Amino acid sequence: MSELTNNQPDAAPADVIAANVAAVRGRIASACERAGRDAAEVRLLPVSKTHPVEALVAAHAAGIDRFGENRVQELVAKAELLDPALGIEFALIGPLQSNKAGRAVEWVAEFQALDSLKLAANLDRRLQALGRSLDVLVEVNTSGESTKFGLAPDDVLGFAAGLGAFDSLNVRGLMTIAIPSPDHKQVAACFQMLRGLRDRLRDDRVAGSDWPELSMGMSGDFELAIEHGATCVRVGTAIFGGRPPVAG
Ligand SMILES: *Cc1c(COP(=O)(O)O)cnc(C)c1O
Image 1 (cartoon, helix red, strand yellow):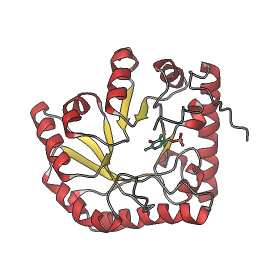
Image 2: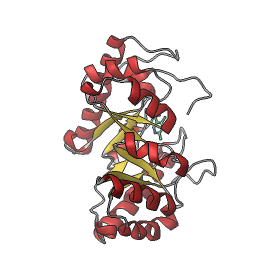
Image 3: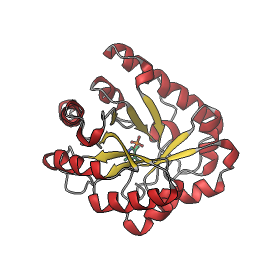
Image 4: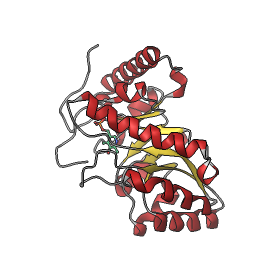
């Protein structure tokens, strides 16, 4: 199946984005079928970082309601530009510094990169004041690369137990970025590790959660991630085209 992507930092035309959304949905459905899974178990989270709001509006017209962004500032800037009537929501999939926690709580529907109990306490306090809750996923560094954010796999169980103290955090699961390698076995090992950790957390109902979500898989590896149990795939390039190399 052809991939209608480009290498321009500018917005891809709306019809290209719509075709890309349809193509990725088709690939998700095929991967689910091969894995004997129900396609309704896997949600597509398009990652719109570096792309202008016009690109989000085009994807929204193709049925997308929630977008992933990896920087709070960029997320908030886009959220403020968009017409609230569209009902577009954002998932923060990158690191959050405590001085931006207030902005994040205001604009983020879901935070997928939690890796600090201090930040968890900060978010919980702000959410309690607002009388609302926030869906969170714990980010795990499954690749062992030192440049990546996320918890070391050995620290996940202890960290997760600590999350039980924060009533306003709705603990949904785990997120990882797999090793960027052409070797499928190495990539699959990252996905397997995340799933193994999730299964232990679920079986023990750690922090009172069933840990339903496994957010793993990006443009280059989402089909493999679905084979290994992904419930959320974060797809940027295959939908919006290429990004300038400095971004991300
Ligand atoms: C940018 C990004 C993605 C999407 O990457 P693509 O390879 O463009 O699909 C997914 N997850 C995270 C955390 C990202 O920062």
